[in-house]
View 1 (tube, rainbow, N blue to C red):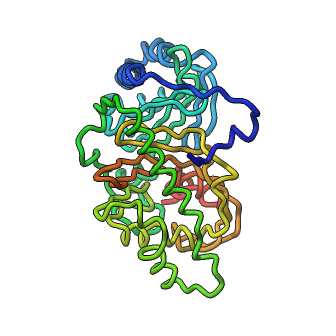
View 2: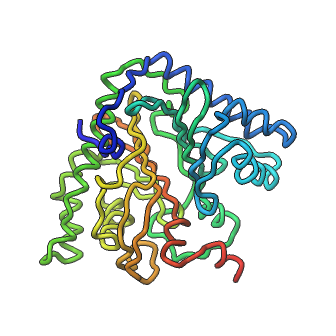
View 3: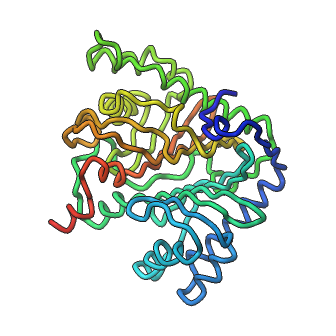
Length: 343
């Protein structure tokens, strides 16, 4: 199976873990319960709960402006303590809980609502050694009534749970199904490397026609697909909606992008679900105002992205895509937190 592995290029030999499916289920339940205790703990018990959850040298790669931090003390003081002080009745609701092994690492991954939280955790010796945590700060700003951005092309609102209703309680014992799901999402992602927007004779309308009708990606998307994008981009239904509200504007804005050079830190399949993530997934120049609406400046930006997929009726039915929009904007010279202060 072709993938977007970056670590393999750096290490000649790698031990690939064959994770027992029963252990995967135990991991998902165990860490889901620990995370709930962190979210609902008092400030007095917060550090104790974090010590149960994290390895003492645990790392956290988070959304802007937290970014990359290390150690339980920093994780407590820079992420959880401010959250809990701001929301004294904080709770977590999970829409998707999946797990699996990628290369020599074991993961559990979640789409949850705090609101709009997506996170992926690497496990070692029953502790979290590294977390990737994307809170949709733009959506929080939107809900608070302070909208500093251009109007989203897609629909704004809380992401729903999977149509199949089994996202939080995915009890999967079918390894072949997990492999099949991951293979489908990776094959679809690889097809995105075909770039009609790079052809000199193409017009915007002809690119749109190609993406909807002739592009290889069409083979993988369900006719009733849903694409759930981050706040600032929004949600789209059907391939046409996906192309019009996200993919075409994104391709016109970031034409020279290379998915393979940057790579993924995780690629897992778990029953009818799969998930990939990159820190960072893509590097590209901000070359037009089609996506997000700000004037182009050809600044090279990095993108923190996760993709969660539901595979249903033989195709990709739903795709939840957390992206750190605030971090992308900061790199092109737009700080949404400063914009709010000016309002």
